[in-house]
Image 1 (cartoon, rainbow, N blue to C red):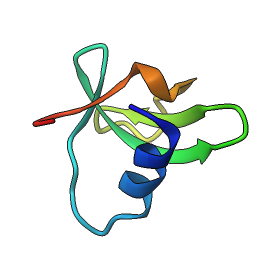
Image 2: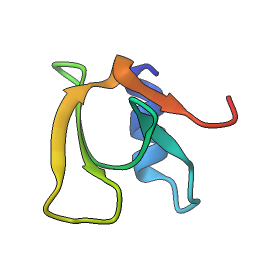
Image 3: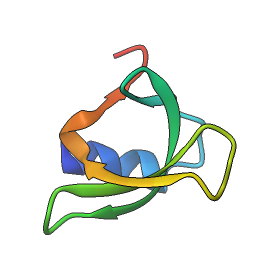
Image 4: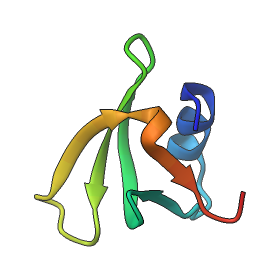
Length: 61
């Protein structure tokens, strides 16, 4: 995924499925300058990771 698409998903009111290494994640923040995103893994709000947006995969794309 590219930074622009990650931003679009983050800003969207729709539920858009995104996975990181096969696990569902929610994008919580996008750092456009560095191409990074902070994501919540699964349904646990305390389980977050900061990863390169290129590691994120939009499901159904």
